[in-house]
Image (cartoon, rainbow, N blue to C red; front, side):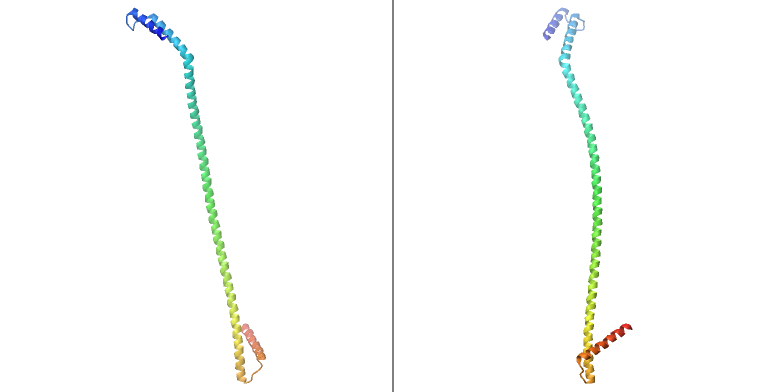
Length: 184
């Protein structure tokens, strides 16, 4: 086909002699025929695949853009969800800290109450020990006083009475003194 075009151009060049701007009817017809043949061949075999490739590329770009939009929306949703989770975690952390403070205050108060109770128990035990020691000291003093009174009375009377009866007599006297001194 190209070979035929070259031959036509050579023949037209031999006849006319050489002005490019002068119209040549035979050359125009053959140019139009070759153009139509080339247009038919290209439309049948080349334009459809090229058009299909361009459309496929446009479709792929549109799909990529839609996918990017969808991914952006999904990312925004996930970001919002993460923010909500973070805020919820922060709130939960604050609640845990507040609960821990309350528990610590409760433990501190219970420890103070236990310390006060233990202190009171120690004081009560000490008072009981002091009272017991005082009573024992008083009993010892009474025995000594009885012994001294008996010894003094026997020296005064110069007569040794029965120790048991003397002791009973002095105990009664001391008991009456305790009762009289309590009554005052």
